[in-house]
Amino acid sequence: MPRTRTTKKLAQRIDLDYFKRASPLRHWLFLLSVAALALAVLWIAWYGIRKDRRVYSAGSLSTAHAVLTKQCSACHTSTMGFFDEKVSDQKCLACHDGAIHHAAQTFTPSCASCHADHRGAIRLAATSDANCTQCHADLETRGNPTGFVHNIGSFESSHPEFAVLRSGRGDPGTIQLNHYLHLQPNLLRPNGSRVQMTCTDCHRSAVDAAGPWPYGDTKSQAGTPKDLSASGPKNESSIFSASRAYMAPATYAQTCAACHALQFDKRLADAVPHDKPEVIHPFVVARLQAYIAEHPADLRVPRDPTRDLPEKPIPADYRLLTPPQWVAERTAEDEALLWRKTCKQCHTLLLQEGGALPKIAPSNITPRYVPHASFDHSQHGLVDCASCHAAATKSQQSSDVLLPGIATCRSCHHSGVEAAESRCFECHTYHDPAQRKPAHSNFSIAELQGIAR
Image (tube, rainbow, N blue to C red; front, top):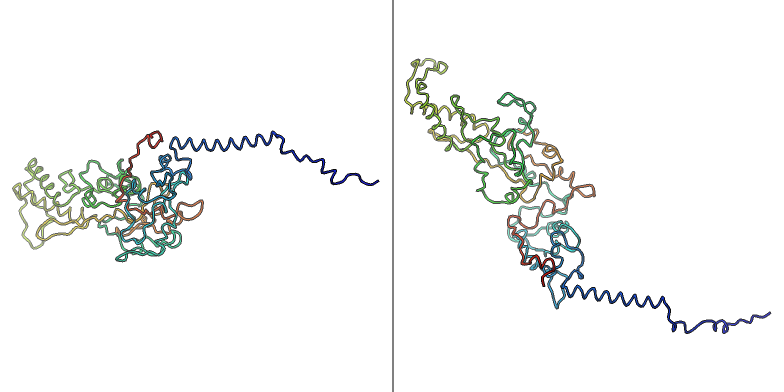
């Protein structure tokens, strides 16, 4: 039997006017589309009425700038009511009036090229190595050549050895100190006890130095060496002097007085002050004058047989001296002991002719061996001191530079998720910290909170 269905008959079954009839699905899709568009317009309008620019933000600000979230004008320039994407250096310098890196630099990068914000709660100082190597991979300077290495690519590969070790120079300090001897076990103290000294007995941060010292003497008249006083030249180390980053200078009163007493005469319990000979001499004279005034019987000085010289007449059994004569003789004897034995044990003395007081060479203690980098001892507290300063346990000369080499630092600071930070900013800063100025702005708290209009 032939088929009766044709294409024409099948086409007649299709409703060609289906789109003219209302459909619930299409109806709700249309309403939702209109509502979404209306909500978006209202949302933007609401922020516009409140003058809140966060709707246009490219992302969350860094922790340091998070308070400026509602103040786009603090960093961005407004043109025709819209903020420019770029940030001008003038906007940055309005708050951070920082110094440049080096006066002889031939290229000065823009602030935003190194400190890119709107990347979340990041540390803006954590810049990439590329920001540093754009100059230091092939360093060029204006004027006279500098003493810096001209081609550094990264800390791991092309960073040179630290300058103080690379040059091979010795420590300029004149204080005679034997680290090896002081770290020996069972050292004998003047009171007869045995001790085992450690690095922290003498080396502490500026904050920790305020506490008690195991071998110090708070009653000692010793003071901070004059060439290390606060009146010295200001440098980067003075900025961190009140922190735990760097070690405070070891002073006689804090680290030496308990074992190395400065007594000068067996008749007196007093010790001379740890000071210049010009201060010590009148101190000795005054103490001896006070003593002989209370003990006039000592003016009758018996002969010392051990000082008799062969083929010389034997002097009388007793000598009767006047107080000035007695003081002069005792002063000469006591100061000879001080200058030639007690003080000379640690200091470099320049003896003068004709009985003049000696000169003490400046201590020349180096406060910072790496002045162009920053180091924080408090961040390395989990590491034993000798792990980095291994040479200290064997050093017998004060001229030894006991700074760890770059290989020691690279054992922890290298690439990888399980390694310590090794990018340039970890140790170096672009702006000169000594010329750093405090940030300042004119925003009120209400403006920062977006309340003020």
